Every structure is written in structure tokens, then in C-alpha cells.
Amino acid sequence: MLAKKTITNQTSFFFSLEDTLDHNHPLFNLAQQIDWELFENEFRSLYCENNGRPAKPIRLMIGLLILKHLRNISDESVVEQWSENLYYQYFCGSTEFQASIPCEPTDLVHFRKRIGEYGIELILKESIRINGEDSNDDDVSADTTVQEKNITFPTDAKLHKKIIKKSLDIVHKEGLPIRQSYMRTLKKLGVEQRFRNHPKNKARARKADKKVKTIAGRLVRELERNLPLNTIYQPEIELFYRVLNQKRNSKNKVYSMHEPHTECISKGKEHKKYEFGNKVSIVITQKTGVIVGAMGFRNEFDGHTLEPALKQVKQLVGKSPKTATVDRGYRGNTQIGDTQIQIPKPFNDKKQTKYQQQKLRKAHRKRAAIEPVIGHLKTDHRLGRNFYRGIVGDNINIMLAAAAFNFKRMINKWKSSFVQFFESILLCLFQYGFKNKFQKIGL
Picture (cartoon, rainbow, N blue to C red):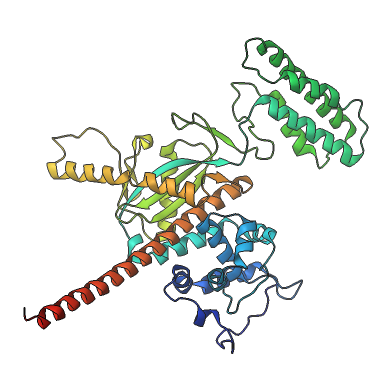
């Protein structure tokens, strides 16, 4: 249930955030530009009318999500910093200072699940609208990268140990009988698995790995025998068998027990041969660098991600771009709908004029500008490692990172315009002062 709206047009007699804060602060300007009523109207239908405790204001939750990815902090940190930062509180709709935290960090988890991918895409669409004419570009650049999941580097020994731990947890939770827990045996095998790269320890470690896998299979089979049919643990048992049956060259392998949809992706990097997560498609405008498309995929060929990405751009911006410049990883595409695909290839002097060739060269040089954008998304806006769960969590993290990048772009633009305005005033005063001095000495 949504809480009743408070009257905000009447300011406080003693203290008001709007009267106290600097109106040139970037967060103050951003709060004025965002259409908060849009989110209120769209998400009101997700709440019931008169049942239950009143929910937190929609503007508060949306503002916390934006601030989290804008400042690259966790749910716990953004809630804690909100109670200390006046600009955070004004950005989220408060009119007076509040010393307590606005909500529990887990409330952000529930709110993300409530609005889903559609709600997050609405935030991305609003971030594009904030950029105004800068987002209205007929030429775009597209590229893919990898969003890594919050998992350790997967090995068979790790997965088998996790199967043993989860099986024993189910046994203790349900009070099932068990012949042997193998705790003492596993402790000895763990010692033998260490230093496997040493020539004298390779055979011993390989033998210990095989023994751990055998123990995991025994516990899973015993657990399945003792559990009733159609138990709630059936999906977990099926996942256990998938891990135990997979081999080195198996397809659709499981790399994580808590994130079974994680993919192993190789982008040909020298320093990181394999990355474990999902593929991300980013589309930016060529002239201004506004992100107009951000989608998540599993491990598709780059060329197959282009059509859904351009469809999302049309949905967010309202029109299809005329040209999309991509790298050679998208080979096989020349035209998608009304969009012409430009891929680097040798020029044909008979079909292309010198002007067309030079135009293509400039477009492919501009395409390289998407690489630092991806770098900023990973280092500054939480795209480097995804802590959200499941495939929906992958897509939510991608779009929130892209929206935060667009908001940060406008903040930097306002800062630069203010500095230029201040410098022009100083220049005028400086020139006027020199002119008066020259007049006094008769020059």
C-alpha cells in the first residue's frame, strides 16, 4: 500500500532543504530535471489500495537506486550515506533533514523485484531524455563486453565440495538419516589437493579430486533415496547431477552452484582468457556519446545481438538510427530494418567515391570512443562485477549502470558550463580592470 502524500508546497518555518542547499549543485539540478511524476504514475499500479503497512515513497526508492550506481556503492552504503548527505535527501524528495536511515537495505532488493526489467528500462529512458538533443543522433556505435558474475574461478573440485556442503545442509535441516558425513576424510583430501602444480603432488591431487567427486555422488544418491517423491529439493538435486555428470568438453556446463546460468566467455584478452558472466551490448551516439541502448545476452555471436539492441534503441529513443558502426565481430550484417550497418573492410574504388571512403574512415575512428565508455561503466557504475541474482539481475544491473552513466554525463556537462560562465565573468572583470588602469595613467 502506498503512503498518503505529504504537502510539500509549504516550507518549514525553521529549516528547509530547498532554501538551504546550493542551487548550482549537480544533484540539486538533476533532481529538478528528472520527471518524478512519470515513475509515480507508472508504478502506482504495483501497490494495493488499503491493505498492509504503507510502503516507502516511490521517489525515495528510485532516487536510492540512481544514487547507488551513480556513486558506485552498495545498498548498505547508499542507505547509510543518505542519512548523512543533505543533497541525497533532497534528491530523493525530502524537504527537511532526517537523521535516521530512510529504509532497510533489503527494501531496495524487494523494490527492484517489484518494478522488474520494465521499471529499470523506464529509468534508462528517462536518463536518455535528460540529455535532450544530445541523444537525438542518427549515427550510433555498438559493441559488446562481458559483465562478470560475483563468483570465484570455477573448478570441478570446488563444485563437488559445494555439492557435499549443500547435501549435508539439507540432511541436517530435514533431520534425515545419513550413514557417513565424510568430514574427517574430506579434511585429509583437502590437504592432498593443495600444491597440485608441483610435479610430486600432481598424481596425489588428481586422485583426491576423484575421491571427492565419488563422495559427492554418494551423498546425493543417499539424499535422493531418503527424500520423498516430488520434494521441493528436486531442482537442487537435478543441478547436483548436472555438475557430477559434466565433463571437460560438455556443453552448457554449470560454473556456479548459486548462479547456474553463468556463461564462460572468451573475448581474446591477453590478460584474461576466460570471463564468467554474461554478454552485454552497448549502443552509444557517435557525436555525443550518450548511451541509447544497453541489453544483456547469454553468450550469443555478436552479430546476433545487433537486431535486438537496435530494436531497444528504437523503443527508448523513438526512432531507428540511420547508421550503426560496429567492429569486425559483427560480420554478416549489412542492413537491419532502416539501419545501415558499417563494418570495417577494404574499400572498393569502383563503387565508393573518395568522399564516401573518408566518411567511413571517420565513422570507424569515432566507433573507438565506445571503448572508454565501457571502461567507465565497469569502473565507475558497477558493471565490472554483478552482485544481482539471476538473469533478471544481469539485465537490471546493465540498464542501471547505463542510466547512471547518462546522468553523470549531464552532471559533468553542467559543471563545465558553470566553469566556463565563471571564467568568462573573470575575464570581463580582468579586462575592465586593466582598461581603467590604462585610462588613469593616460594611455
